[in-house]
Image 1: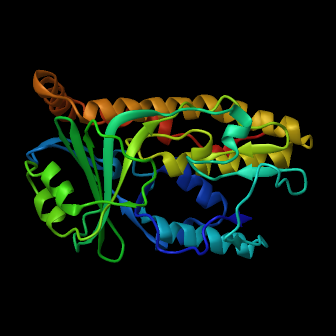
Image 2: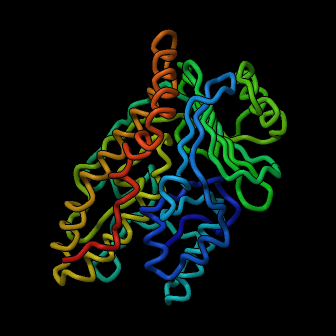
Length: 342
C-alpha cells in the first residue's frame, strides 16, 4: 500500500461513524478496537442560532440496537493501519502512486478529492464552488454528553461533538462569496471564525473563545464520477464521490466502498467483471447520499419566514412523532454492506 503522507501523524479531527460502517468493523473483527478509541453517540440535537432546542433525535432510545460512534480521525487510522499490518499489508509512507503504477494488474485509488486517478478515468472536471467556507478546530472539553449538536442560523451553521480524551470537535460553515481553496489543512484565523458566529448563543461563544488554531477550506460540489474503473484501475471514497460534510457520511461511504470492492474481487474471478460490478452496486447509493448531504446544506442555512416555519415544523414533529425524523434516514443506517453476496 502506498501512502502519500511521510508519516501517519495527528491529522484531521473528529469523525462520526454510523451503524452502516460499524457493521464493517464488526465483520473485520475490529468492533472492540473501534469502541476503545471512540465515544458512543446517543443521538443528534438540532438547535437554532440562539441555542434553543429545535429537535432531539434520540438514537439510543429509538434505535438501541445500533451503534453511532464519535472518534478522532487519527485514532481511526491507527486502528486500520494496525489491522492492515497484522494482515500482512506493507504500508510504504511518502510514496506517490501514478496512474501507471499498476501492481499485479490492479491499482486502487483511495486518494481523496484531489485524486490523481479520477481524471485519468473521467477526464478533466471543474468542481462547483458552493459559496460556503468551513472551519475545523479541536478544543479541550470535559463534557461527557456524547451528543453531536447542530446550531442552525441564517446562512451559517455550526456542528460540535465531544471526542475521547477530553477533546471537542468543531466544524463551522458560513456562506460567503470569496473563494477559498479546497482541502481542510490550510490555516485559518480564529478571530475571523469568532466574528462569523458572534451572534450564536448557548455554549458556542465559550467554545470558540478557546480556539487557538483552526483550519479553513472552501466547499465544492463534485459530481459522482461516471467511471470508477477501467478493468485495471479503480477509485473509491472521495476519489469517486466527494460529498459535502452535512450528513457525516464521507468516511462511512469509503468504508462501505472498501468492503464491497473487496467482496467483488473475492467472489468474482474475472477482475474487470468484479470492478464493473463494484461500481454498479455502489454508484446509486452514493449518489443518493451526496444528494441528501446537499439538501442538509440548504436546510441548515434557511433565512427569514422560511426558517421560522421549518423550525416550527421540526419542533412539532419531534413532539408528536419523535421517530419520524430518525426513520427518514433508515435507508442510510439500516444498510449492511457485509451482506453483499455474488
